[in-house]
Length: 478
Image (cartoon, rainbow, N blue to C red):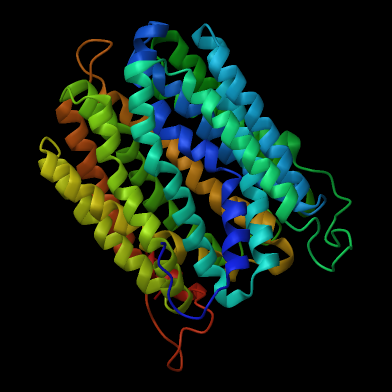
């Protein structure tokens, strides 16, 4: 039974948030299973581990860059409709992943999966804000995190079993079925409209969607990452494309009317929201670097079996599953304090991972601390961001907040890939992984420093970080 704390939230609220989280349940479940299949893919597609990072680059870039676009869509379309459409796109990505016979065709699958998750995730925040009172927002994000962590509980072990006895392609057929169940539950249980019952979405805007800006930024982000993954003339070409696309995006944003820009109007002036989003980079960039490269180090360097790795990876997911509701309830009362506790736990985890990840005890201890850190920091961060976002622009603001996080994940896989690459194309470096962990520890420690926990008149009000505190905590005026 998952833990909760504070006022009773009700079985229906738990069910609704579980269904909302279920939109990406299958996608989250597939990630550790596909990660465990990395060695098999390297052999099957005859690629290197550096080439393999294109999978992560496409998924996280498409996911992160298109989130703000679909955040705008939530202002025009009923969020449940958008939610279910995203699940349908995920189903198509799963079929392509299962049937692809060459590396180039397979890469269509993670790109579509990233698009699907962007469609779903941008609708999730709108649904949560519409269905729950403000004093349960932290709990909702904590519970959602617990549900998604539960998606990872069985998936590593299942992935290890499939790799031992069948093929990695079976992963996609399984998550296809899970996705279909999630879509059916959404249609049956989620409200069809937000706002007044039976009314349409009153926040619809006649201004056009920033499709062109999204595409240009996507090219820029992918090209900058390709600079790291390529060499020779291809690298020079990637630099040229990256610079041109970045400049085009910047000029276009400055010349486009505010309501038509990629970034929501007023976001950069909302300093509390802006700096909270920046702090998210210090959380997700290192967390996911460890999450991506630890299984590869254990499999390819230390020679662990896929089943053993799958079972050990359950530890952090177990912690988040059982602590998520409680941490979310504490975040409703003191979000900044929970964020600081989370970053402290993550810092210690990364240090343990750097020096003792070659032992079973060290890996288990680090993963437990990692789970505690994620369970504490994520709902606090989300609570602070949502309270700082204008209610009528929840979808667009929270999509930008999540976009910064997910783009950083793709960037982490690309930036650290050269460190992890061994002397041979299909080998990895243990020293490289230890350096990655130490860099992550420094970033987590910076996250601790970035949190200011000041109270005004004896209470934290809604938990929103005051703009001057955030500027001071990140090096501005205190």
